[in-house]
Image (cartoon, rainbow, N blue to C red; front, side, top):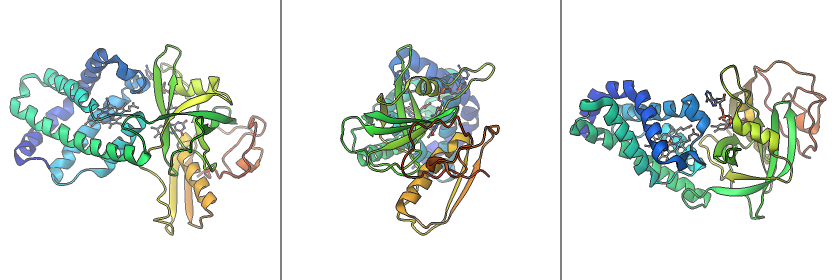
Length: 347
Ligand SMILES: Cc1cc2nc3c(=O)[nH]c(=O)nc-3n(C[C@H](O)[C@H](O)[C@H](O)COP(=O)(O)OP(=O)(O)OC[C@H]3O[C@@H](n4cnc5c(N)ncnc54)[C@H](O)[C@@H]3O)c2cc1C
Ligand code: HEM
């Protein structure tokens, strides 16, 4: 709970801090990566750093958390915290790293706001930071425990047992644990991080949703190749997965995480509505496949928007017999799973 004294200071300074958060987070990441470059090797996503997406996410979440505390000092914005904690677990954040982030974040706040950061103001924002950090650390500890892994040690090797071309710019990889041990528990709708070594030697992580329910110890991910536009480069990890990963290769995957999943069987009777767009349909195909595997009779409404231009007509195969695949010849699926995986209907 935020103390009454700190609440008054936060209320008075929130507009100034929120207004400067973009500059604060730019300086924060700049200084942190200068001193701790290892955090950019296998933890932070450098595409998001370059595009500013991560800066905006961090800044928005702190402002959102402070605002929520002011509105109701006794409660926590659970949805916000759960989403971040799942992402942190999927990249292997550990509690000691909160001290590193604190040091550079508060250094940047002092630099940007200068004399406005009195001891009282610093103490109040410190309280907010550690309330948020404490809530995240607690959630992340539980997630690691549930996943049966030590904090931060989420990685395992998986073998690609099948690579299937879904459309010219989308491929699926069917994976099995390389060590022969059972696959970790996954809930329909969750995602894994894929960790790859780029050509310059730097490791990068990206998240991919589990896009099917192949059964047993198999897992499936489906990756859309991200094409650059004028002024922006091609996506580096999706490009590498498309160009270099073949059947028999190994990939490094995190345990599955993600706070948006099908609640089964607790909600067994309730209808399911799935809303997605573009490649965002992958968790929905995972959920639909899981419902089908269960033989579920739950009513399902699927709304899927796809802006890609029409391509050649679809060759119905057992795997693509609904409306998901729209290419006949180029659907060069080398092998088709025996069981049909439903795909979202187009809205
Ligand atoms: C929870 C979750 C689940 C996901 N599930 C899936 C899924 O199932 N399937 C799927 O295909 N994707 C999924 N994604 C997206 C995926 O994680 C990657 O973001 C995506 O593959 C792009 O990664 P990349 O390395 O290819 O692109 P990046 O290299 O990260 O580039 C991403 C974007 O940033 C731009 N960019 C990069 N560098 C710069 C720069 N210097 N200046 C300006 N712009 C720049 C690129 O042009 C591109 O548009 C998911 C994401 C999340 C968070
Ligand atoms: C109170 C402190 C922190 C806050 C408020 C915070 C907030 C966030 C937010 C909002 C996201 C984006 C979540 C999403 O995409 O859904 C995120 C992602 C991330 N965070 Fe944190 N975070 C904190 C601490 C840390 C720490 C200590 C580390 C480890 C050094 C860390 C590393 C990361 C990484 C690697 C990502 C993914 C980045 C990416 O893929 O671009 N965070 N965090």
